[in-house]
Length: 132
Ligand SMILES: [Zn+2]
Ligand SMILES: [Zn+2]
Image 1 (tube, rainbow, N blue to C red):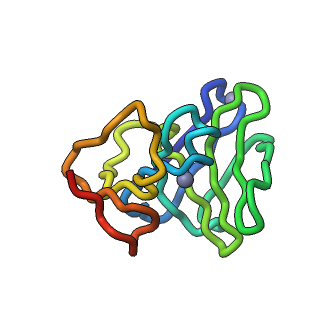
Image 2 (cartoon, rainbow, N blue to C red):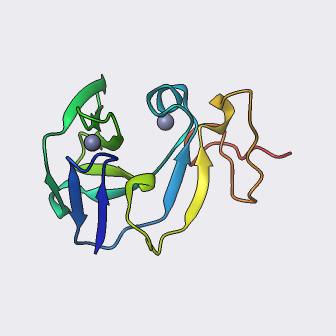
């Protein structure tokens, strides 16, 4: 059972099902919304039990982003295909999870590099892998 919470504790959630690997996203939208890049893992939305009042921001036609209205923690990215992406930074340790790659690395900020040996995709997972 994975549990998570925002910084102030007003929003908590529990995930019954197994979670897959964590993927980092370096797109400009994720960077603006989080202050750096995001790391998240998808879950079927019906498997996540959320307590507390989430504020949703409709960031595109196909997705919305969920925040705590009190402390501003960015917790969820919901794609309107039944998947809710949980931001891994809000999980209670130990998570037992591993990161498996970096998407939209071609859109990353110019002030950092990631050299953890994981694949760094130009855009999505099917795109070109960026070499050093
Ligand atoms: Zn909060
Ligand atoms: Zn992104």
